Structure formats: structure tokens, C-alpha cells
Image (cartoon, rainbow, N blue to C red; front, side, top):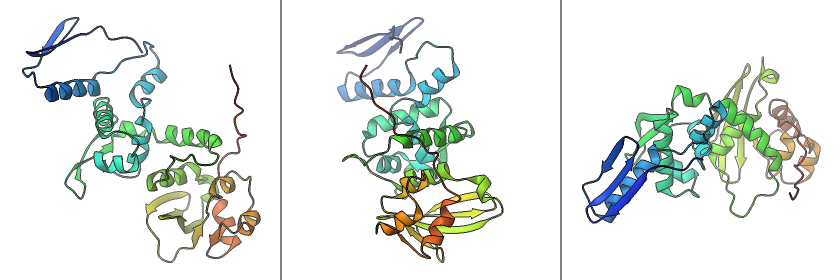
Length: 266
């Protein structure tokens, strides 16, 4: 990105920032207050790539670290900064707050008018922000080719699994069909409801629905590199209704097959 032309001076009287056509001076010399001012400005003012291009603008807004994961987690429901942090524990809370402010300034998210159970205000995607859904789902499908064994620091969350179900849903194959499934991934339980090509994904169990516990086979099943018979024989998969239930589920959910990317040194 382009370098800032601002001049920043911090002294005993406070903080002064000057640039072409403006000068901003704080009225406090307290270090904590000055740090807050700097953080607030960083959350609003971004560098640019200097490219008059839609892709460049998009990356400036959501391509910063954690940006697309914030979008992912808000696709399922509104969340407060603390709720977002629970699903994204690897991001420092102050950086997450900065990213929220930046994305709100750019029109991607907004206050939802609701609060979490602890009284913190929640955020939701704007209409413009929700238009990122198809891009995000396609990006997730593309990235799935690089999913091998989980790394030690990797976690799986309800939101990531719920969005994965949206990304793998085969709408055309589901037209004229009605089905309900409960999916269990260790401690995480979600469910999907299919009605005539429309998909709803929710949290928790679903009474009366067949239960699918795929273990670590789900990605291979969705990518069709493992058959239903192979999965059932592995001992990792447990399904109410047996192989027929799993086979029916997989007719409506799939990942495009992609060979594992070949790494090279350049």
C-alpha cells in the first residue's frame, strides 16, 4: 500500500497529526488516551494499493487480516465484538474492534439494534455486505483444496460449519425434495433443512431428523474421494438409517474435486 504523508508529533502537550489541508491536535498528554486516538484513526483511515480497480477496493476493505472471517461469522446471525471474538480467538480484541469500525465505515456492516446476553451491542452485515456471500462461499470452496490434516492451532466452529453447508449445497439437485439432517462434529451440533431447493442451516439438534456423525471423513465424502461404503467401513462414521441416509445427504451436498496444489520454490 502507499505510504502515509502524514506527520505525527507526540509531546508533553498531546498528539498532533498534520497532512495536506488539515491539522488535528488532541487535548490530552495521557499515554493511554493518545494510544486510543491512534487506534481510532487506524480503524477509520486505511492505506490504499493505489489501483483504480474494483478488486483493489474490495481487498482494501475486507482483505485485511480477519476481515473475511468477520463476514463469514456475521452471515449466520448478528454478533457483538465479544461474540465474534469467541469464534475468532486468534485475533486480539482491539484489532477485531478496529476491523469492525473500519468495515462499518466502508458500509459492509452496521449496528443491528440488538444486544448480546451481556448487553453488548451487536453488528450485522448491510445489504451491500451480504452481497459478499457468493464470493465468500466460492472462496471457501477454492480454499478447501488446501485442507489436509488440521494444524495444531486449527479450530472448528459452529459458524464455519454452518457456512460450509451453504458453500457445498447443490440447489439444483435439491429442487422438488424435502429432507432434514442433524450433523454432529464432536461437541458441535448443527442441522440442515432442505425444502424444494431452499436450504436453512441452524444451530443445535433437530428433533426427529436422522443423525450424521462423519468424524474426519466429511471433506473426503463431499469431494467424492471417499465412497459411502468406505466411510461406513472406516468405523469413524455413525449414521441413523445407515448408508442410505448418508448417500441421500451427499446427493445434495458436494465439493468440486480439486487436486491438491503442488508447491514449488521460486
